[in-house]
Length: 300
Image (cartoon, rainbow, N blue to C red; front, side, top):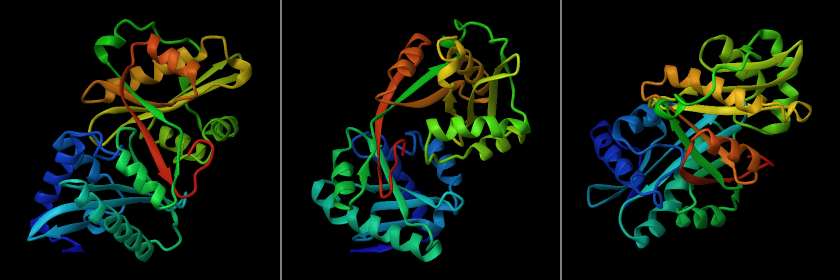
């Protein structure tokens, strides 16, 4: 029994294991989907190459557990994908802590400056919650996962006339709002604007007679699903239908680029107004997730 770096011949068995575990929300990570092709595409989008960070648990020549990690050196953060362990609770207790420890050791070896780590799972994954607590990780607030598709979007209102594309000079107005609404986020305002200008993000800005009213941004993920990352409206601009216009405008643009014609998002438990807006637009629940992080702030 050991934790090892697998060879190329083991990768199919690893994918089989991950796909099987992801099919049950009480056993998988919140960072990946459930379909085999989508999981392969999402793993392929990680940095560094997931095959270099992959660690597996083996018993009697079989792969029974796996873990990988992703990093953002600019933010000094890392995300541990998994751990995935097949079998009963005894197998989880035996292998899950060892796999996470191996991931942290691997991370420390390749990126010693990054000590901020995070796990993520559905609220049903209580064993991951227990593991996070054992590791001293702090649980974030519950975030609800919502999804909508083109059939529902056909009933949405037309584009808000106040919307426009992002410009380079928007960063100075966008930054204070972004930092206030999404403190210590996985994406900075500068990167949102830069990726919007580069066409890697869909970014729409709401403006009226020179007044900045907010922004929304999103992208198509590696698995082909659309994702609405950020929507923010300044306090003084709320109650004027800006949020509705931003969600509809950004989502419609993301959907048009998504091979699956969908838009997903996550919204915090306490954001009741936003949750009400999404419900009115026909977004349907698709799970609820919690992050477990070594250095968590107000918005994780």
